[in-house]
Length: 358
Image (cartoon, rainbow, N blue to C red; front, side, top):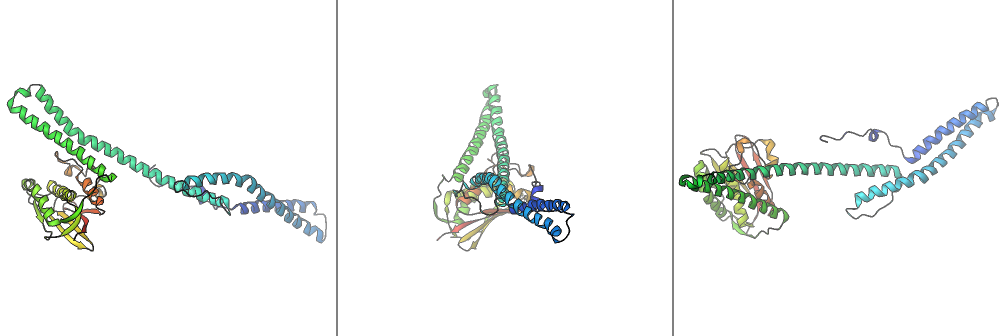
């Protein structure tokens, strides 16, 4: 159920302890008995006639209180303690705590334990519902990403089988397109495998002293032709010999993915700039573009696998849709964090930290 849980009317009622219940019940019996006795001896005059109902009520109150207190402790508490042991065991078994019997007001203790237990179960159910929602979205997005290249490859092969293979103008072109589709499938599978290894800690990082200026230059050279075709200028404003402790290959992948993202969603004749700032024993890096930007509602989910911001940022045919998810996992594998700030029409800035080198 979405939204807040409805309030429990029982929780809004004042809670009485067992002693208060016994005293209240005994008081009713004592007053009732005193009134009945008072009516029976109303003919008696003098001091005796006045004190008999009062003494009767006092005696009945004492007897009733003792009987009810014993009965509650004997017949009710014994059953409640069993319930308490069960709830307490369910709550504490995960951390290996001993099963301790409640002391004092057992009903209040059980009531408190049950409320805490119910609150924990609600939190677990909400967490499971969110995970299930993410799983459904992930499977749907993965199916969509795989379906496009598979259908393309299937179409090219069917065309070749139906006679295109004999046409020299068609066969090589369609074989190249089918090969590109296979490359995209391989890219998706490789990226998914990398994310799985990063999440499970199987992939070890080789931390070495790395020159950030040289690293960013290398990433820019790899994307220089693509940036020129899109009319985007890539700028490296990191000072020379800015050293960090990082896995060189994975860090290069981070910059390549972020710069590629800026190229794909940048403006014609726009720019993407990489800068850094000292931050204690860390270096703060920024990859900033002046592209189409992202609305605020999408920012919290931007690093999810295959998450789509909208039609304006639909993934290009050649991408795997996992670039930003990989970036996040690589940065976290370094023990660092990454964030993003953006406004529609004003560009996007990715900020992350790396450990300073020697």
